Image (tube, rainbow, N blue to C red; front, side):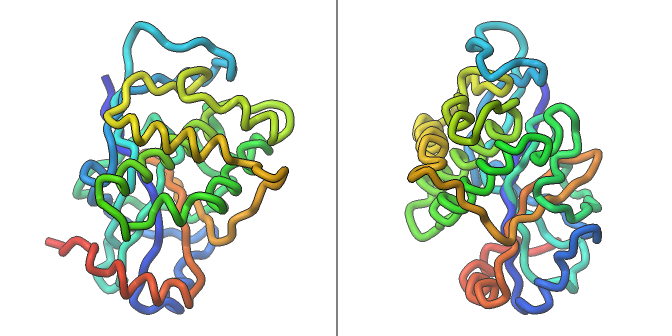
Length: 257
């Protein structure tokens, strides 16, 4: 059985202008993974990259363990302020604690690099659904103003929705693809989940994609890639928003050893 840690990413900095200049596609950034377990929900799952979206529910055999939720990273360079958070985009890789990971900053369509499932951009439905998922539900899923237990369920549900979209070979139009999203069928399947509320949030997020016949786009979404570790989706806010976010969230930054 393979241990896997899952991620969700949001960049915060004290100096927003400096932060914005750091996020250039093709450049590299060194990050240390700090935490997932306290910010998400455990699950077991199976992934069969060759399975169609209609593949029946998994009933026997080996499963993988993971944690769906918010991942936290510190910059390896202590002179860089703030913290990075992000959602994982591939289910079958993880992180190592105490290791500086050299990530390449990518267009979000160009992760994950592993094939299968292949990059988001290899399937136009994945592109449409990921953009709409972030546009409709990212702010709600990552809002920490409510209770912490509900926050963990929301970020876990959001992570499950990302995996389902990024790992299924979605067909037809984006509207048809929404109908193919099912966490108990297809290539990516949840076998057991620590929280039914997290599963309910995931289904709610996915079922409302394309509401009104519109698939929205989302600006500021980047990917982080590394061949040995989990690829991650990161939201980098505009400088004005980043300044406000930094005031509220900088206290979450874990003190470095």
